[in-house]
Image (cartoon, rainbow, N blue to C red):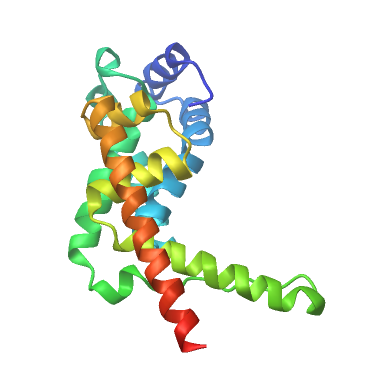
Length: 190
């Protein structure tokens, strides 16, 4: 999204002619945000890698599929990523969706307790986001994690900005409830 839309359109024209540099420029500009979106939606690094690769493979094979009149290229790519992620998640057993792909190591032994506490909180938040119904998870990922504006998220989700705002409000309330319930239950368990 850092590049102007007109530059994306020109790069797509060049890509259609087989220009590898144009592909590289489009990939460099959009790959990170697409990968993060899928990672947050799926909770799986491998799913994020596969879906991101598939988004760009589809872009290469069908450069005419994008219509600049319908919105920016980023929205088109997020839409593809959204659909591919949904399809992938429907095919995976539930346990694979929530699998842990990596372990963070503490910076020093003195920070160990604090980092473990933060990691536990982050893990709880990650699980709570993944447990949200799809439409609510999407708005949290796009607006809160990807810091997308309501109008931009509305383009990706093909709904109104008001719907995005409403879903986000509801999703935040659901997250607050889930996290406060977990915190209370852990407080009693300790």
